[in-house]
Image 1 (tube, rainbow, N blue to C red):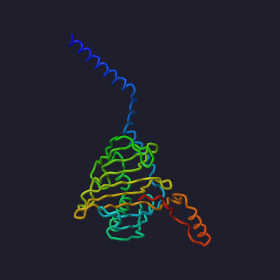
Image 2: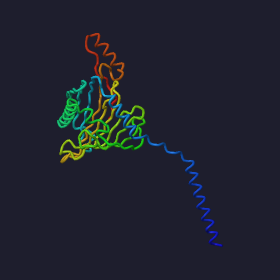
Image 3: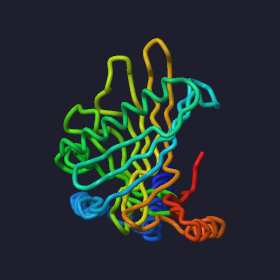
Image 4: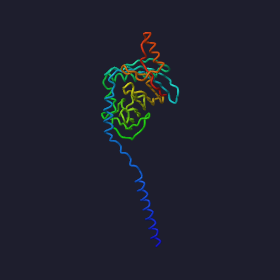
Amino acid sequence: MLSSVRFSKLSLLLLLIGVTAQAQQLDAKPASPAPPIASIVGQMERVQVESRPGVSYQVVREYRLFNEKSATPTSEVVAQVDYLPPDRKTYEIQKHTGSSRGQDVVRRILQHESQMVAGGKSWSGAAIDRNNYDFSYLGEATRDGNSCYLLGLDPKRKETELIRGKAWVDKRSFLIRHIEGQMAKNPSWMLKRVDVKIDFADIGGAWLQTGMEAVADVRFIGNQTLRSQTVDARVGEVVAQKLSPARRAINRRNRRTGLPATIFVPLERRD
């Protein structure tokens, strides 16, 4: 009799557990299915082609180089970059202060950009597409207030233009807003590892790089951090952002005196 009672209590307990689990399953909202990765990548590839600048643009970037655990830059460089489609990109160092190492690093970066464009590799060699990457779906995330698909990036080759990491793809436009990860191939034996973060945004109708951070583990030196930010821009003949009232007044005065109007428009700076 005692064993029968125990069995009945155990059966009742198991029944209650089963009912509770079933109720929880009924109350829980079904998880929204992940969109097909092929569809996201296909849309992303399409808009990348469509968003390639078909007009000339001119940007001014500010670069700052930091030593390991230093909040003060050891070098600051301001460079102007001019792009003339389809295959010409030039640059000019406008200003530099501090260590010459920063200027040397920036010059090598901009020289590499110019060579890629001249050689026709600017888009195909570094494009975030299925020719260069295998993709995985990592979920959803928010970037600068914009809902994004989060994709894993696995380079198919070891090249300096490719990044092993993640991409934030805007859910509405399918344009890439942010990339971060590690360079698939280090550009020099002096560099043991290079971690990068790159931001993109609309500037005057063109989808361009607006910010970058690269943290390099340099042999015999330690970590070196290079940050760049687009501080001024013009795309074709269209000014990227509205001029401030003060700048408009200066332009009106310049036109009256025969001086040229302002070319560049300050963009929002992120420290």
